[in-house]
Image 1 (cartoon, rainbow, N blue to C red):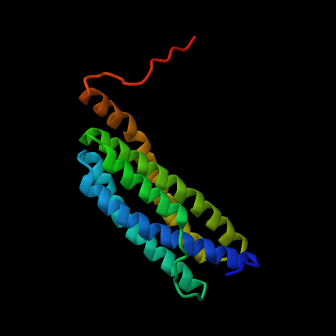
Image 2 (image 1 turned 30 degrees about the vertical axis):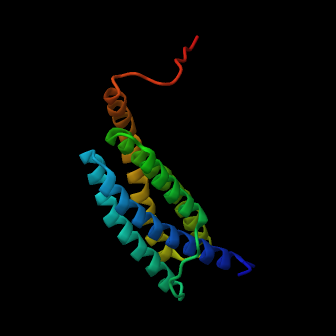
Length: 176
């Protein structure tokens, strides 16, 4: 569909994040089954509930605009999910898998944050205050989850390192 004005661009982006959230929801359901770190599992499980709410908020946003909720195929989200699935399959230990899951979560959250910020700007410029409010709720949850993932990556990587006997397989780098 040709996009000729700001409203059409906005609807396209809204459909894109709607598709992305649905893909990420399925990805999270897979990740929570594969994760072994209890804090990571709990964070993902909590975010699954938030993602379900976010999808509802997106559908409400369409309705508030007088539009039928729809999905625009989001190739970026498909790529992020496929990358995470591949990495999870490649992991040879639970701790490495947990670290990879956490990293995948952080990537997804930052992708979503960027999208929501753009959508909020568009909705604000078009004067759709109710839509802005719905999108801001989603943005806050994504920012919280990104912070959780970023805060836990060091601990998860430390566990993975200890599991292999503290041996770092990479080259040593010294700073002068």
